Length: 460
Ligand code: ATP
Image (cartoon, rainbow, N blue to C red; front, side, top):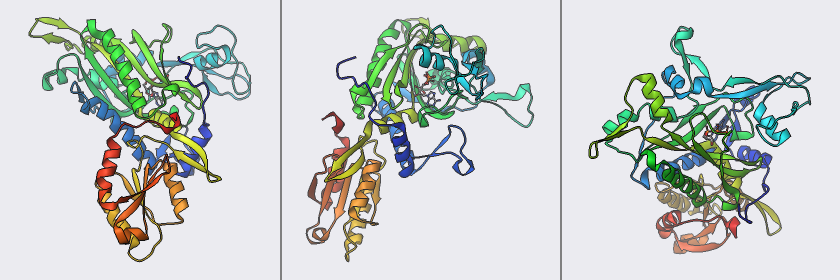
C-alpha cells in the first residue's frame, strides 16, 4: 500500500442505486411482483455500459494480443463435469441459521469476519440481525440444481454452471486440435454463471445470476509463476487504463486458509466499493488440477505433446476471473461525482469515454426553423461510428444534466450560427469547456478523442 491509497469510500451504495434507477441503468427484477431476491434487470444504459465493459475485456484478450482464442460453452454441462471439478463436493459455504427471533440465515465466515475480525477466528458469534444464538455451521452447496427432460429423477439432474471455467477445460482437447495452439496460450469466455449465494446483496455486487469474464491460460509448469505475475500486472493495468483510480485498487494475496480447493496461489484485485475493500477479480494459479481431474474422470488424455522436443506434460493454468456486473459497479462507483457549478449541484459520471453508454449527444438549441433537421443530419453522420443520442426535449440545462448523469463525454449543440457557418458547439463533460468546431469535422475529431489514452479527472 502506498500513502495515496484511499481509506474510505466517497459515495454510498444508496446513491449509486438511486442513480441507476433514475437513469434506467439497473432495476430490481420482478419489481411489480415485489422483487425477486437479488436479481436485477439492466435497462438501456446499463446494457450499453456492461456491453462496453465486456467489449473492452474481449479487446484486451483477443485484439491486443495473439495468444488467446475465444469460446462460448454451454451453461448446462454433463453432471460429471462438476464431480470432476470438485464443485459437487467442495463448492460450499458454511451456513448458520439464527435460533433467536429473526431465523435469518448467514454465511458463518462472513459473520466471523465482521464480529471477530477474521473469517477463521475462534470465538462466539451471534446473529447480526437480532443478536440471537446461531446453529452449528453446515456446508451448503451453491450450485443450482435442475432436471433435464421430462422426468425428475436422480438420473436427470443437471446444474446451472457456477463458473464458466469448466466449459473451457472440457474443450481443451478440441482447441489443441483445431486451433493449432501450443502453450503458452489462453481460452477466454464471457457468460452467465449461477450461484445460490446464502447472503446475496449490495446491489449487483453479489447476485445469484451474474456474468463472468474468465480466461484460462495454459502454460508449461515451469513458467506458471512467471505468467501468474504477468496476469496480475496485466489485469491491474486494464482497470487503471479504463480509468479506475490506482488509489482505489489493490492486489491482495490469499492466505493459505482462503485458497480454493483447486488453487496453489491466488491474488484478488480489490476495489474500494462503498461496502469497503472487496474482491473485483481473482487471479489464480490452478496448477494442473482441472486438466488432471477431467482426464481422470473422462478417460481422455488432456496433455500437451511437443513434437519438436518429444516432451509431454499437463499444462498449468493461470486464471484471471472477473465479474462483468461487479466490474460495471466498480466503474460506476469510481466515476460518480458531484460538484457545484454556478451555485447548482451537478451529478456526473466521469466514465472513460470507451465505457460511457452514449458517446455523444446531439442537442438542437431551440426548435427554430431548420435547426432540428440540421441537428438530425449531424446525428445521422455520427451514429454509424459510435453510440449517439438525439434529444430535443426540455431546456438545454436539463438535457445536459441528463447526459452528465449517464456519463456522455461529449455534447454537440446546434444553434443559429450552425445554420450560418456550419459550426457547432462541442461541450466536454469533465472540463465543461465549449469549443466551436465545424460540424463536418466532428466524426474524425470524436473518433480521435475516443482512441486517446484517458485519465480520470478526479485524479486532478
Ligand atoms: P466472492 O469471494 O466475492 O464470493 P469468489 O472468490 O467466490 O467471490 P470467483 O469464484 O473467484 O469469486 O469468481 C470470479 C469473479 O466472479 C469474482 O471476482 C466476481 O467478480 C464474480 N462473482 C463471483 N460471484 C459473484 C456473484 N455472486 N455476483 C456477482 N459477481 C460474482
